[in-house]
Length: 275
Image (cartoon, rainbow, N blue to C red):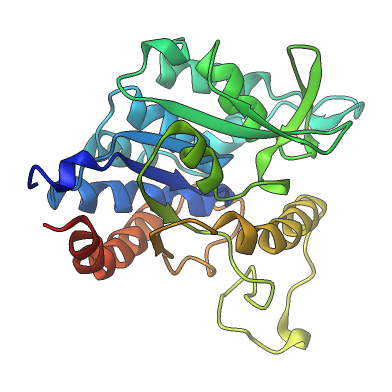
């Protein structure tokens, strides 16, 4: 990197997207390989998890190993059904798993500035979390409403940030980023959850209740995506619409798509950075 380009503070915005968020890892791997500097990260939901791990010191290869080890059995072991009060699942097992890989650090302990986005379910406001427990922040940011119990944070009740700011470009602006790379894995409304090939509606399989909820979040989130992307210098969009929301066991495919999309954007990133 030239001295001129390094004057720019580079921010990376990682979108929500459930299982599709594994594609962020592929993007990070290509940025590492191409020596693209990342000075700060903001993430929403799945993007918050990947962003927290990366900001905490895990590189792309470590993240690949971690996520590729996840299979259907692993996913099943993280569910903890509860009598529905604010969600079908308590979320304690997910939180414990997050704690085991994030290492209980606080935001101030991370190797670079990081923030995650949640939604105040009472007011509908965006809540940017960048202090306190990283695990608590990520858990709140990724708390899909109705599926997982809501998270109480500083007197507010929080759910998934994908409802209000699925690609947190604006957060990076507020953090002082001069150049922003946004990674968007939220599919358009016209993309089919089951395939991404826009198959005829009669071929669309009847979804279960969890898919319905996640699909509704996706539809609402996609409307917000267009606004969220305002201010991004480069947008990377991995082709992962064929990956189901809960297909956590398909990390390898997602990561590959992230690598392909990032590789296609490298020339433009370097051009704008002046390298």
